Structure formats: C-alpha cells, structure tokens
Length: 129
Image 1: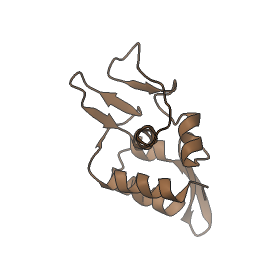
Image 2 (image 1 turned 135 degrees about the horizontal axis):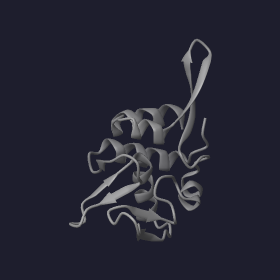
Image 3 (image 1 turned 30 degrees about the horizontal axis):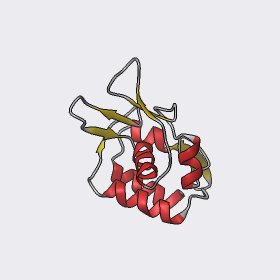
C-alpha cells in the first residue's frame, strides 16, 4: 500500500471520475494550439498539485510543441508532485494479487497507456493507494 495522503487521494479519484479531463497516452499533458488539454492519469494529479499551490515550472517541449513539461518531466511525476501527494513512485507503482497469492506489480502509467479509462484507474487508486 502506498502512503498517499488521503485527502489528495480523494481529490484525485474525484477528478478522474468527474469527466473534466480528456485522456491521452504517453505524456502527462498534450495541449493543442487552441489551448485544449488532454491528460494522462498522472497529469491529472500534476494539474491538481498546480491548482493547490505547488510551484511547478511548465514549459512546452522543444521537439513536440503540443507536449507540456512539468519540472522537466513529461511522462512521470515530478519530485514536487510526489512529495505533495505522498506518492512513493514517479510512475504510480502498485502490487496486486493476480491469482491466489501470486502477486504482480503494475503502474498507473501502464494502465493509462494500455487504454484503461480514468474511471478504471480511479478504482485502482482507490484500492491500492
């Protein structure tokens, strides 16, 4: 079990279930020229950190203008977001019982990039974080 801060965990789960975020894969956030953003699950947590006063440097990728970089990270959580949320890993590692005591480790990054919906990921966070 992760030591995620309970109030931030609830905020994150609520945000993922809210339909306020469009989902993307491969990056924390993609923003088109009109300012429309698409997020991965960890990007949603990063956005919540920013909205709650965490000082994060945001820039556009030099190679892909639609990709945003948060504290020099475009694919995993920055140390400042990890600390704010109480996350133990930058990719959202968790261990689950695959079959009768056979445990496997996965990450929220893998879940997101393999096509799980934000609602499915919210269920995983609720259970394992």
